[in-house]
Length: 107
Length: 130
Image 1 (cartoon, rainbow over the protein chains, first blue to last red):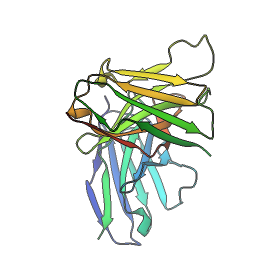
Image 2 (image 1 turned 135 degrees about the vertical axis):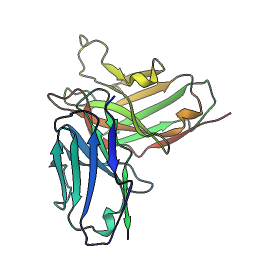
Image 3 (image 1 turned 30 degrees about the horizontal axis):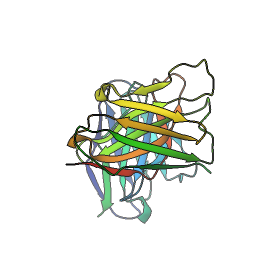
């Protein structure tokens, strides 16, 4: 199975600041990567698919990039509602696999 | 508007079978555009894809169920088109199967072997304990 490694495990950021999250794949997955946001007690929400395409209703401050084995999710100016855990997921190879998550908390 | 809702027993004894149903509203699960799947989440292992079904309504489509090999042959997936539901059974459960179980809609992508998930249920906690 493809292993996805997310870093850092926790990212402490002040509101209004920029946050950059990393996801590395154990082998090339082209651009078949999605990002999800999960707030405490809530269900995961699709943010990005195809490595860089925002899902419906996702604010433009969320930007996904990368291909092959290295991917990133950038939140340009963190809002209070953005503090959450973010997961990457690859769907290039079967079965689909998820990263362990990056928690973005308030500095 | 698409909604998915899981239901089933929240407590299962070791060695017994976990059974969950996902009720879908707002869209038909009979479609060639999407798969319908299950994902579980534990503090230790994180998010794990369990399996999915693909229901086109064709009597000639054969067995369109898929499951994670890590769960070996313990997974059974089924569809009830009359109720717009799909179901998961996981046999011979152990404490390691304690998790929040989500049903979700999966979007297949040309050129990719698996799918991403664009809609999720609210999740249901299943605890395996005697």
